[in-house]
Image (cartoon, rainbow, N blue to C red; front, side, top):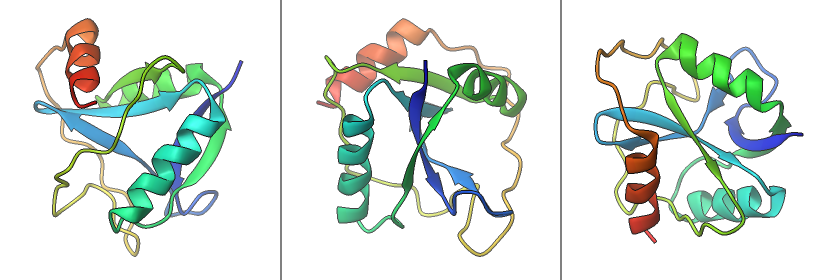
Length: 123
């Protein structure tokens, strides 16, 4: 089974993955359905983000990346309706013309169910 994520500069040395913040944590969205990922990518582009590429990937790879980078992840199922946050941060860990910086380490733990509820309230 594959999940779908949003990548910037896919398959380059300057590849970046889309994440959002929930509280102090960076969260990578893994979409169960490609159509949902495409719709979200279109919404991001409409909010002046660079156009992301929707890529299918093994969920274990994303989970491993999240563990290594101290990110959280959430699986966006077809029953969930998510939209990009109305506010975006000015400075990201990834810049289109720079190499990706490593994510800051954090000792905070997060309850995935609470994170899911917060994301669903964005609807």
